[in-house]
Length: 383
Image (cartoon, rainbow, N blue to C red):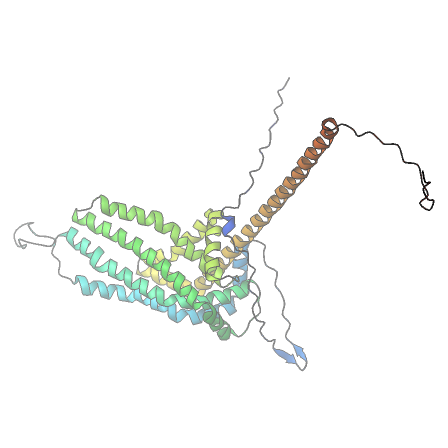
């Protein structure tokens, strides 16, 4: 007889709304409707809503394909600011290295007749390269990125309107409308993120310099480890805040709170989006040819796709947090109602017990016979 095994289904673990008390519920910002173009007298141009996939990032890719022409034109206004960063990376770096390091290094000292008796140390040259070239160059990149940051507001605003199908054809007006509304938020938030990244890069370069000099110690290693342990998670907060600014009607402080709530309730997708967003920056440092290819790709479609992906990330995070909040509110309301019912039952039980004990405690009163009726008009007889 075959043994029949029944597999018991494990109960699904209920999702908890972490840091739900910090969450500020907000809706997508309603933008002013752009006047429709008049085609014929009394008739305006039709505005057709397109059907996009339900997935958040699938929708972002579909919007890029469906609104590529509009998004590309909007990215052209972002391009001059982005070129500042690209030119510093591709053009200024070689000249700065040549200016600081110079040439004419001799690494063949002491090999035989005809070679000079003294030469340059490879370790010392590499250490100088790390600290005297790469670290100042990293600071120049940070400064260029801060210059670019206010213009991210216009790019994200155009991407948001395309993502939510807020009709616009006046691209220049729309771009600078977003710039005027949100530039200071992006400037402050991006500057904080850039300074965190600069601190992480500086700690790493200092450690590499110390290793070349042979003077690396526990202090420099601890600085690198601590900067990455604390810096990497902190970088996700500016990233999430910038994805919220253009989409949701939130104050700056509320966006900060919601960013923390989104991160702790969506840790995996936050890390994935952060790594993918940082990949182009790392590829720009891989070499001149690869950097040029990446730069062209970013100019053609990369910037707008980056903005759409962050908009989708904010939409996904807020949608999940709204759902968790509604479920938490339902459970809280049910618990309050159950507590109130239990309180009523306890009250009735106490009152019932007291009423049942009352007759035993006090003796029943004897009924007095009714008094005979006497007509008040009759006078009393005199004795």
